[in-house]
Picture (tube, rainbow, N blue to C red):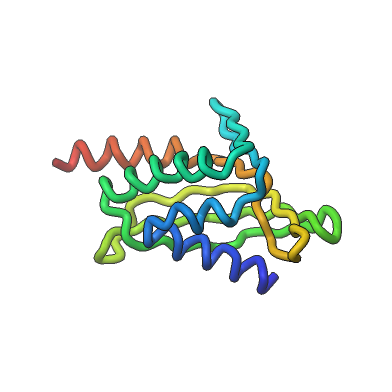
Amino acid sequence: MQAVSAFFEAYARALEHYDTKSIAYLYNIPCSFLADDTTTVFNDMSRLEGFFNTGAGFYRQFGIAHVRHELWSRREWTEKIINVKVNWRYMDVFNNPIYSCDYQYVLKLDKHDQWKIVMSVSLNEKQHMEEWKRNSTMAH
C-alpha cells in the first residue's frame, strides 16, 4: 500500500507544479480514460501530455494550487494489477477547498516494477467541477 500511496503523492505533486511530463510518465501507453460521457484511449505519450496540458491550463485559470489525495480502497486483481479508488481534493493558494472528486484507477506494474495507470475512470469530477463553477459564478 505504501508504494501506491507514494505513487499518488508523486501524482499530486506533479499536479501542483503543472508538470504534465511527470503526470504522463505515471501512465502506461496505451491507457484509457473513462467518464460517463467520454472514452479516450491514448497510444502516444506526446498526445497524452497534450491532454494534461489542457487540464493544467484549467487548474491555473481557476487557481488550483494544492492537491491532496486519499486512497479509499485498493483491490489486488493479480500480483501485478490493482484497482484503486482515490478521492482528490483541490485547493487554492490559501488551502481553501475548490472542489473534490473521486476516481477509480487500474494500475499495472511495468517491466521495471513501477506502477503505471492503464485506466483512469472519473466517477464525478465533471459534476463536481460544474457545481463549483456554478456556485463561484453566483458568488461574484
